Image 1 (cartoon, rainbow, N blue to C red):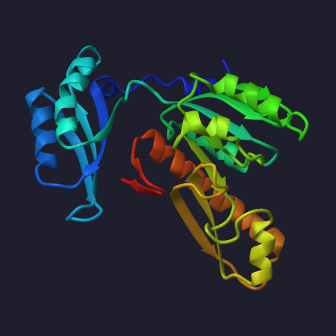
Image 2 (cartoon, one colour):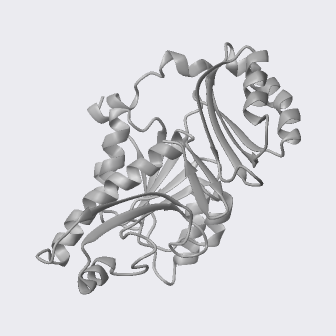
Length: 299
């Protein structure tokens, strides 16, 4: 068996069978944490991690992430969800429950630049991304052999102005109901609303500049022409507004007047791969809550 595939087939950790995460957002008010904690206690669950954040003590929004263990979770999860609905209604909660044993399924979209894809595959192989990479979709055939060496299906779908609509239809048919998250790992095509809507807040893009500065094409040339002293990268959820979705993670590095455009690109590639991998990891670990066009990230 290929060594890449061996690394990808590590058995699930024993504790994951009975562990789940709950994400909650609701209007702030007294008693939320107490109600959630007491509910889990009544059902025999043990809280192993809890994070909370309030936007405003008076009239703002409240966000909570709880990780807990519950014996025989798989058999009891439906009843747990049904019983929690009463508390959710009382506090006007939006909430999700994610069992750790149900690994998120990922699709990676990529064009010709491979640095972000390679980083994700390395981290996945090492077990740092606790998910399943179901497929890689590309508008170029360049990385087919490399991706398939990991035992991952590679779909080559060419995209031209004339075939874009048909290509997007094929992409949607591939991912529909098959993946939980789409990652644009330097996929150099604009994603259509037809794909965005069913995957709202479940498509992560890496933008090769420090948003909101230098939006659009050739950001490193823009940065060089302005003589910037720091460059960065931004991972964000995709919305219909180009490069305008909720920001998940950003990072920067200092540069100097002696760095030409190629050197800025080299530095930028390192930042991009790290920032995208962080954002993906936080999403699959259920650490992100979206409110309006902002994110709360419990990391």
